[in-house]
Length: 328
Image (cartoon, rainbow, N blue to C red):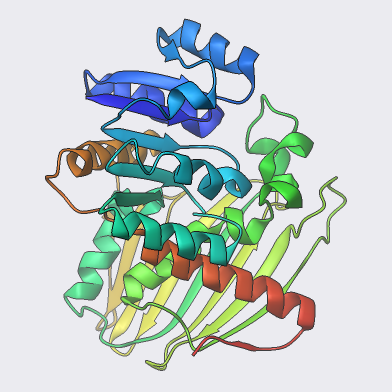
């Protein structure tokens, strides 16, 4: 199997390492930064492609796009004739029309597109999904989601000011970067889009960024479910959790504590989740290999990622206009 990884930042290198550990695939890398590309290729004993022109002249079983969001689609489009499987890191783009056009082109060429929302591979999240499918807490009335961590702590070896997260021109901001939460919300609820979005967001810290560092998003679904999402990169420590309130009980997932709690009939049942953070990335790459081999369909499709992007951009619009945005 022949695989190309475009972008050798932290996530690109993680995927390369995981692919090498689970397969005998021939892995190539490409990065616009020549020194970084060559250093990565030498260190990991990979083949570095000299330029984009030579990269698109070859055929691959899969191409991974691991660049800043603003470059995702423009680069992915160049490989539509080179492969039948394209993996794009989240978010699929920072521009909705661009993502919609790409998804249409990929569908016409029968190319499988898998988007990197890795929390769907988390064993705790998979358990929550299973409990909901079994109707353990009945109809979902309300969902509360939180994620937060101080941006300078995200990637200790990198100046946070140079990260795409901190820069609007690169598709940054907490709403897009933390769109994992929006994705798993839609997945858990089996929803495509809410009917209304309202958001308060902005830069409220002293961090040197030109994007929103905090967002409070409210979603109203046609099913009657309300959802609230708190997203930030300003809080000290790390928080990632969700609470689903149903007619028959509650489910709480806590990433940091490594547990899922089911409260039902006045009784509490705790499921302890044993895993390493890299496990979900390994599972994601195993799934990618099966998709590339034609054995599975993408778990996170381009259409699903488009809906996440639509909500994220509606939240940004709502925050700017200070009004509710209707999606249906």
